[in-house]
Amino acid sequence: MTSLPATSRRRVLAAACAAAVLGACTSPPPAPPGAAAAPPAAGSSAPAAAGLPRYRCDHGIAFTVRHGDDSVTIDAGPRGRHMLLRDAGGLTPQHTVYSNDQLKAEFGLGAAGNEAILRSAEPPLVARCVRE
Image 1 (cartoon, rainbow, N blue to C red):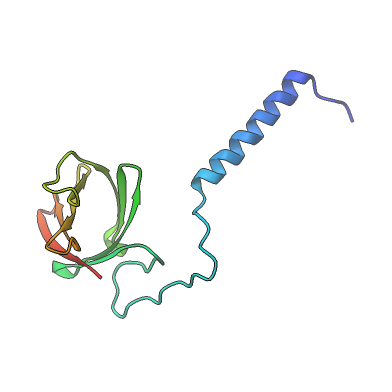
Image 2 (cartoon, rainbow, N blue to C red; image 1 turned 30 degrees about the horizontal axis):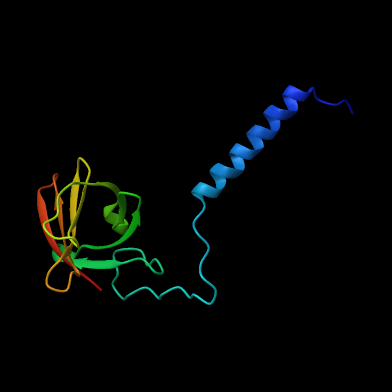
């Protein structure tokens, strides 16, 4: 077996490190010890995801939301998954607004801060939601 030149070894090592870092970025975070997945609700149209906030809305819409850095991912099961970016809107500190070209979501509404509104561009639709 022949040895690789030093520059080739560095490139191979750099590629291996990059692959490991990217793999860590795309892997879901480990579940806390002793955490159990929540059973799916009967008649649920959004996927059951342990620990994620779940909302039920007008028009039979249900979704979970995963918060990221200045973004949210809304998973509405058969209605699709949407990544929305943070907007400047919001009337109170708890009121947050996220949007993309197709969907706008407002969270932290209502007296208890557990309500949301989804606004779809196509088809035009406004759905009022409550966190479960």
